[in-house]
Length: 433
Image (cartoon, rainbow, N blue to C red; front, side, top):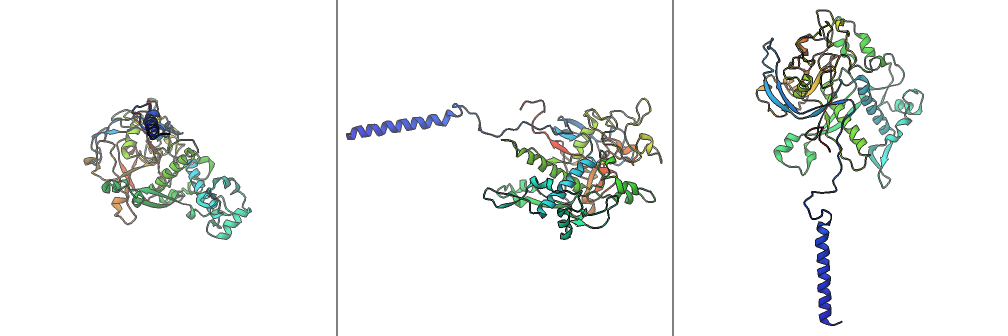
């Protein structure tokens, strides 16, 4: 082949290669600006047992005269992003799923039932395929004996109404990690996000003795012995849970969902389950009726037939008139127009918000949220968290949607529970994904 022919061949080859390269660059997108085409799918989430609360505007504060002249709930117009909320308070049986999960996770680790990686090496992840091999009812099983001999997991004393070899509830500790996003935002340094991580270790078994401790000269031992574990109370709201325990439950619920979604092809995680902010709670409680004093929309605690509409203390010494001496089932009474049960009464509910008397004076009008991650060494005033809704032992004043109250974050009460919220990712649930 002559030199000229070789040059012509090289030129033709270069032109063909250049043509192929330029056409390949735009072939996938058809030459159009399409965005990245191989993104994972997200079909939204409609969690079981939760109701969708649409975005909207809310006038927070008292719906009537501030009778106690507290000045801690001054009127203000705000906007709330759409979110999901549990239709009932978290029940004993739902919380027991969390307790059993922590118990079994500890047991599997003690037994070295861990997953293997592709190289056959053990990882730090528990292999849940072995969970069914643990029989907690068989007190003579080898597994129970191993725990008992270890003396780190089994309590050998007698537990009321149960007895035998019982898991030491002091060992039921849930460990998880959160991130301080506000600190990260200040530094704008996302190269090592783990330096903004916070480790949490929370004992998650409910405080059953709160039934006795909350009331002096009052016989409540049967509630202490039975309320959390007896099946008669499975559908009643869990109590004896402090703010830290409620936070731990929300984190576990997120991990539970994301672990399931990881088994689905090309699916991404959802946003975190969490406690609602106090104003999300108020917005949901009003049921779409702005300035409504109670979740049912009216100005009174009785309907036209004289029936009480919530579980609270309607008169001095008269607890059972509304149908419940203590708590009642979490889905008792009629729901509000967002289909949420017992937003007033039954148990007061933890929110994620820190309590400050003058918070309404400086909070933002877009998704207001005031949080402070207090430590046990902080001033007691900084460890206060907002609770809402009133409870079975409260008078009607605390049932009002706009009334704020608080408890210390490490406090457990027989009249305080919680429910979860989940931010909706999108403009409206009516949009098509």
